[in-house]
Image (cartoon, rainbow, N blue to C red; front, top):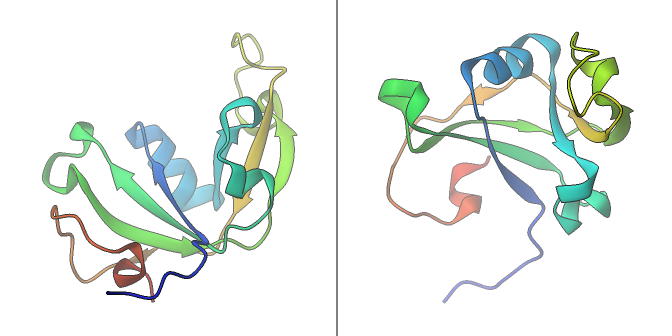
Length: 119
């Protein structure tokens, strides 16, 4: 049996290829403040692992990328995305700035312990 330590890694769903492009090129991931997990609100996240849904073809249903979280800030959605007319434009979002995502050597679709996925 594993000794349980506090979890500091967040598994984040990347809903679209557009969102993945923002992660890769802008270096941040966004989460609405109103729905954020407690570990984000408490600033306890040290790593973020990216889960890809069916839209991602060969990489679907897997976690193949991760990144260290450098900081957690709050910004308006309209400051992050060029879409001022979006219905959530004035909503607060946590942004998790990170280093460049690193690719994991495995992309298992089997359940694993998250610490096995991170360095």
